[in-house]
Length: 240
Image 1 (tube, rainbow, N blue to C red):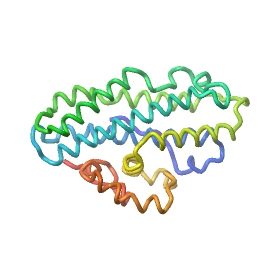
Image 2: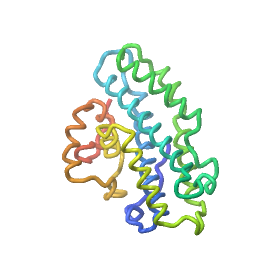
Image 3: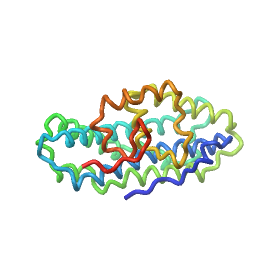
């Protein structure tokens, strides 16, 4: 299964916006990689063609993963192509640094549409169809890892001030928050981020954390499949 990116607690505290970019972007990619790995681990054991609540919850879990992956890909493309603060970063990192390529996006959209349909009619879901849509499951992860490596190795030079890059990062985070359902986005991040790697991320107010249990309750069957309980941050056994 795809491996997560090597992000540590020290990275999140970095004062440099360049290092902060790699850290925050990598941490979000790691949440997606963990979700993908969880899906691949559950598929062989799930009981298909039945109306069991676990099948419905699993289909919703996959659909949420697709939504979060599509959001992240679109956010990365927007960030890399922005010229509001100067030359587009994609010119520095190269075209491969844009992970929002048509075939990946279309694959996620097809997977999402199928799982939404199966959530409504779980008895029609089959392992063969789901496995066909998932494929090997690692192309998305490989694309994201490659993008992260290009950003790590790219030379931003002296033309882009650290303060400017920091503003771009914060603006992109605000865009992602503004273009998603916070009752999905926040539990997803908490359910797929290993706090042992960077305890200070994500940065959420005490008031926001207090609302998480209510958010989890909205999709409690879905979050049972995540590696961490989004409310307690504790590890969860693989739900079958």
